[in-house]
Image 1 (cartoon, one colour):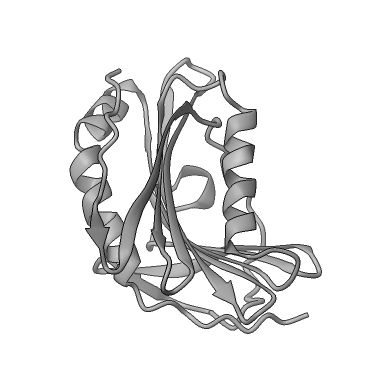
Image 2 (cartoon, rainbow, N blue to C red):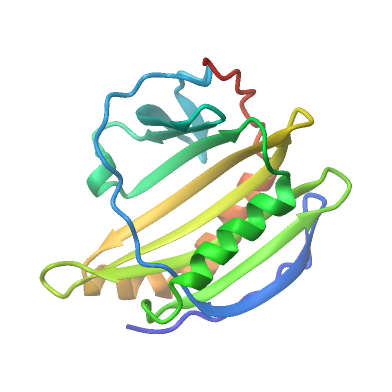
Length: 206
């Protein structure tokens, strides 16, 4: 497999390049199947990059933390190729703290993943941040699963954080090599779209 080069983005919809970090990242984690019960008032579908993403999986790990995943028709959480996700922490952290926690989580897995590269874009005016990162792991056959994600963090009211993200995943060494070869263009286009995306307004149901 080839390696990925860091590409700085100088200006993008009010976001500016904040910090490139050269590092190895956490292994990809398959999503678990679960009944999709809308707890955020965002039943979907969510339109992103010309595709409709329907609610496919939800979780409420704590009273203040909500997670929902959305997939195109015909895709499953365990084997998805593209996904949109919305997460809400209603209290307990701001955007900077949520970002720091995610980066720390990735750093704790340092050494387990041969791929590298994450970057952070910050819109100081709107107190928003975009984190994009690459992940990989090998399946039981020794083939790579490669995943690229972009997470946009925005304040939730005055007490928490909303995350709107997009994820792309490929399976197998041949697909992974092709994916890495085209990642520079995909990354640029997807970050531009996510920066301009009109975000859903979550209304958590307790």
